[in-house]
Structure formats: structure tokens, C-alpha cells
Length: 290
Image (cartoon, rainbow, N blue to C red; front, side, top):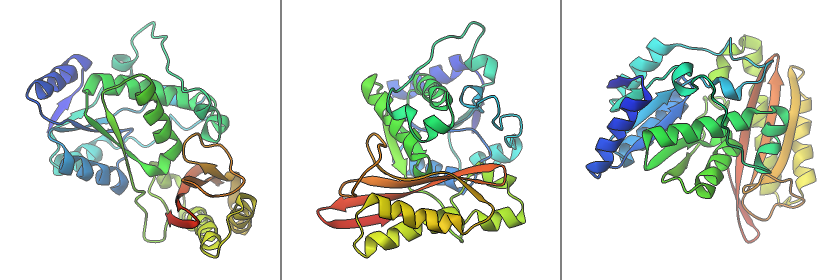
């Protein structure tokens, strides 16, 4: 695996691959890699060659009171995982490489970036879309792989790619979970033992909504109440939001009848976790995927 630290060299590698008519796969990450990230890498390897991953802890998507300084940075362990996966290259730029002096250009997807995560974390999505567009321009992938846990983020990236005619297809992959249902996240390392047990309340709340839908409930308020009831039963949980939203613009629904999500964001102690349930609709039939 080649480690690439400059934009110029990464672009040169991408140019070579495209001239050879090879299909470039790309997995952008912020590091602290877990099995969820590696599932994206394995999907990319099945569908593309060459495959590149990036590790870049993007300062532009963290607010002033968020956890940038504490975010895990196990670069040696991350590199070893990617080497073991036998990908072609790791793009590992530093902040000065990505944001040179005088950097002042940002990308924002209006509307979609202002709800839920965007409302709770002002400026977050502007930082995400800006860095993702930069990475896509640098790596020039045919396919870029994102996890469904960050469903709103992935939808926003899809919209940005469409609106700006970027020559990359965004591939959304299933959530990878621990045995007890907790969605894998780099932030899970912040949880101490009791908080780790409490964190399963997110997936339990989503399962409660799924059970309600399975019994015929389609009213979004009823489904939200089912989630809130489970969340209220966990004393360590502080709810940011628990909503039923459509899968296009993440607007709240009155009734579930099309592709949508149940989404939750919850503080367990000081750690903020997110999760979601995908709801696929076909007529009056619903299929849910945790």
C-alpha cells in the first residue's frame, strides 16, 4: 500500500488510473477505523481497482465546543488495517495541505443541511460537503463509499454530486453493528462500561418503532412516541432528536408511506451518538432495515 501525502501526487495517481480505464474506488474516513469502515473497503475492493482510502480529520466540520482535540488518532493501527486489506493507496494529507493559507471557499447544500444534524451542529455540514468535494476532485473516483449510519450526510453528498455534476457515484452501504445492536462509531471509544451498556438504547428505540410499523402503525407521531418511550427509560440518555423523516430531504413526516428513516441522536454522558432505521415502502407494505 502506497501512502500519499500530497494532493499533487494523489491527482497524478488518479490520472494514471483513469487513463488506463481502470475503475477507481474510494473510501473517505477521519481515521479511528473500525469494522464499519473496513466493510466499506471490502465493498470497494469487490467492485473497483484501484481502491484508495483517505484519513483526514477535517477541522472544518467540528464546532468550537466539539471534540476535535479529543478525537482518536490511532494512525499506526489504522494504517496496519488498510495494509492488511491490501488496498492500493492511503491518501494522508495534513490540514495545511488541504486548507492552504487564505482558504475561503465553502460548499453548502441548502435546505437539507439545515435540519437535524445541521441544526444541532451549526456549520458541520458545510465543513463536510467542502472537504468531500475537495477529496472527490483530488482522488477522482468512479465510486465513493459511505456508511448509512450517517444517512443525512450521505444524502447531502449525493445531492451535492448531482447538483455540481461531479463524475462520482456515491454508494451507500449498510450499518455495521456490535453484537448487542450498537452501531459502530469511532466515538464509541469515549464510552465507559456503564455508558456503553446504556448506548444500546438507540438501537432499542429504533427496534420499538420497527415493531410498531410491523403491527400496522403508520402514524409518524405514534412511531416517535414509541422511540421516546424507550429513550426515556434510560437515565444516562439525553435526547437531541428522535424523528421520522423522508429519505430525500429529511423533512418530518405525518404518515409513513414512502422511503423514509427513523433517526435518533442521543447524548450518553458527554458522547453524542446517532443511529437510524431505514424504512422501505411498497404500497401498504413496509420493510425496515436496522
